[in-house]
Length: 329
Image (cartoon, rainbow, N blue to C red; front, side, top):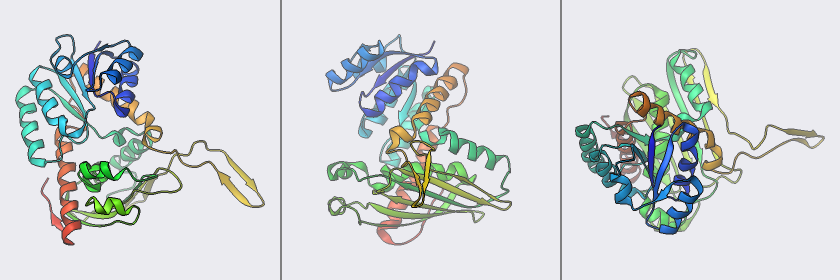
């Protein structure tokens, strides 16, 4: 049985900890700078509480889940792979593409696998749509439309250290664009505005944005992001192809509808990412455990993480300059 250590006992760390057993692995140790958080999660999962250094270097741990703040990811990855551990790391590896490249070089030299937490690829609906695209059900892809809108904006103090909307929020959609297009984008054109919370603009970021991506053969992807959706967590896409179209809808709390003379009434969509992507997180952890146990290449890989970051960098630059940016992935 794969023995796993967890670094980071916050919101996403607790989700992954709860999914480890269901993936057929064992959670051995939990680390967090806030000792009470580590001790609480360790007690709830039957693991031990330990320091970060102890988890990254422990001889009775085969793999490490890194769910700590972004500015620690690259250092923790390097320490873990040098200690012979397989690594799962939440996105991004770092806010600097150069730092990501340096980290991936260390990972490559170690020979240890690294998987990046782009959980949306594992959503059952999104994964099935991609499978049907790859099977040729809609013919050659021509146009991808992705809509991703949060129910409410994060605090301005979070925004100031997040790297900006394109690197923090849209990076998931940029990865999905690569997942669905079947070709690498070569050009990025982005626009952004602050329409939701003036404090976000004061922090130097945008809260409303749109991006156009174009591949070498002319395939186009449109991405729409907003930090506000009064109706819940909006997660949809549509892929138009030469023979047809495939679409993935929002997920409501239930599929129950009530019809009266006033019209049809349905439940709202799920409130945020922990609820909307609960099954995706479970499938993601199963995939990580399987790739280690069976010796399969991890996907999404560290290179996938770098490519999404490069697109986010290009979108940030384009939004600031008003000009399209060429990219080479």
